[in-house]
Amino acid sequence: MNKARSNPLNTFAMHGALIFYTLIALFPVFVILINSFKTRKAIFREPLALPDADSFSMIGYQTVMKQGDFFLYFQNSLIVTVASLTLILLFGAMAAYALSEYRFKGNMLMGLYLALGIMIPIRIGTVAILEMMVATGLVNTLWALILVYTAQGLPLAVFILSEFMKQVSDDLKNAGRIDGLSEYTIFFRLVLPLVRPAMATVAVFNMIPIWNDLWFPLILAPAEETKTLTLGSQVFIGQFVTDWNAVLSALSMAILPVLILYVIFSRQLIRGITSGAVK
Amino acid sequence: MTRPRIRWHIVVFLAPAVLVYTAVMIFPLFNTLRLALYSEVDQSRVFVGLQNFQTLFFDPIWSEQFCNALGNNFWFFLIHMLVQNPIGIALAALLSHPRLRFAVLYRSAIFIPTILSFVIVGFAWKLILSPIWGIAPSMLDAVGLKSLFAPWLGKEEYALTTLALISVWQFVGIPMMLIYAALLSIPEEILEAGEVDGITGTSAFWKIKLPLILPSIGIISVLTFVGNFNAFDLIYAAQGALAGPDFSTDILGTFMYRTFFGFQLQLGDPHMGSAIAGAMFAIILLGVCVYLFGIQTRMRRYQL
Image (tube, rainbow over all chains, first blue to last red; front, side, top):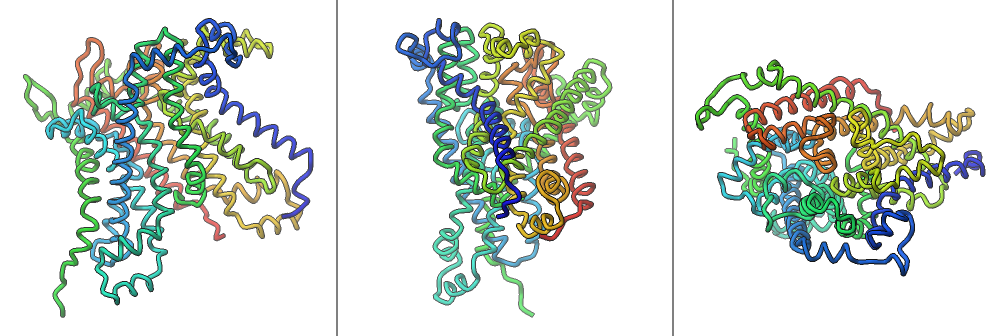
């Protein structure tokens, strides 16, 4: 690294700009979180003050716990996200392996067909998806969401995973074949463990949009017992607009799980994006 | 000559992905486009050809709403292109500076809004900008600009721009990350060669780095385009399905939702909803094609 490129004044200005933008990025989250722990009076009198012994209150959280079924919503979100991710990874890896490992007629065409969905949003087909889910009786079940998210995530998953699977050494697979392993065993025992980092990238990429989606839960599964956390908080907040404690607490409860997941996976996510997986 | 045999394991590997993708994504997509050609008369489905599109584009009641949503959507996209992407590029340029300390910390913090759901973002900003709570006015007051404050989300002339800026706030992390990755992949030798020729600092950014990251900027633009013309959640979370005040924040996504599901007194109409989806499909396809054939193939790619 060269010395000519850094001087103290520049460094200072750079940190200044970055800190300024970081504050803009974090400020709203911070305001919501601190005010969710305050009394109603304190929320309005001193919105920017941290909660202290006087103004501390959990009343908002109590209302949320009493009124909304947030544990159920959370559970639904978790089931939908985990199930969709599992299917995306399993089906996506299998298809990616077929496309990258074997030469067969229509390989290119199949790859293009699957890649189509990267650019075209699945929401365009909502009217027909709803009709189909109604016809098959899947409407207001978590399965409807799982299927939609799986279809939505597959194109990018196949694309990224097949890039990575091309890098797995042929010698290894051929050694397996000589030892008499079946193609399935080679895939599950030899190839899958080697592309685990790429699978993690795909999982993290898909996790956020699935967890945060409002459109499909609203249309395909709005029933009380299938609401996801995102839809549940939307509805809850809509009903309690004037109860600021409850609204702020509900928002905080929706923020926290994502924030925790982000802290756990941010390294993976950032590495995934910066490794050029989406280039 | 040997008879080509079917290698069943290939079929087994491909089948689940292709089946789910075809059944839940591709088939409904075309089915939606087909439904746009039908209408409901006396509770039965009748083929009406392009009549729905004719209504959508030429019936004054419909075309006015459609043009409003389309125009708003373009404005929404323009703000993202003019604000989100330049800020993202600037942040990435700062972050990719060699020997910058705490870069990981800044990066992770600035990306946090992107992981939040639209519901959280919409309501959090609604509360902050609310004149009742007074965080925004009192903060403007602190820097002596209180007179600038207006209930931005409640005024027809500001609401859409405000929402677009909120969306920019949320998603600036994505262009930042992608450009950051592109900047990191520029080999050190090229920059050093520039330095030997006396090109350093900002001029190195404009003359060397920016031309090299143009392909990434192209990808970000098309991602922004597709994302914006497919947007719905933020407007719905902040302003509701009516996209108030007085439809001033209505974009194609909310327009389609209202038409499809109905609202208040208007009944839902899946066929008109499909027609709007068809129009959205055409717009997105057009944008992607412009990118693929007009921009990507003409862009000079430098071998790094």
